[in-house]
Length: 188
Image (cartoon, rainbow, N blue to C red; front, side, top):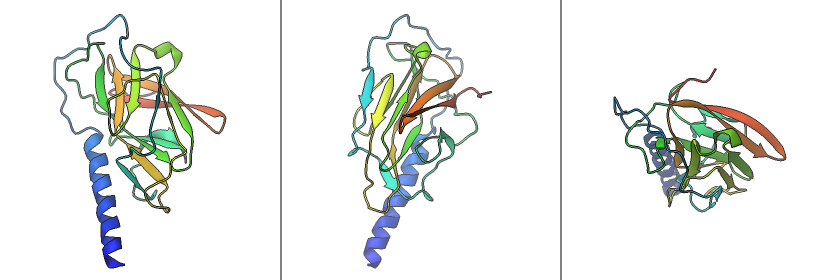
């Protein structure tokens, strides 16, 4: 019994450490303005996230739910009021990657989508196995590793041309809510 608790505690600690590492420990590269690209050349319209790929699952009192989200459905996690702009080099489409974890309530089916007005300028993707850029992601309903787990966490984030307050459409149980995510720029 003591070994099982120690193993569970180690899993929770490792998951939290991984979540903290993935939500923005990189340094920005000063003087690197975004380079526009006229067309999007890669990525599916909708990414289906596999339930078997979370980097962590656990109890709600141990997941970092600070960030933007819909209560009891999802949380896009980051540590500051505004997600730190990481800069770096753009991909072939002229998009810069910005890390953000996606925590999803176990047993919930959800779609997170970039609004039509931002397609080609912003893409999203979360996976523990592949880098996928998409206009929308679908997940769930997924179980946790343990029956008592109520959140699963996936690494990934945003690809965009420049810092922005990014609106995302979150649909679950037939309701759509717009969530604003401060990716390098504050949201009003």
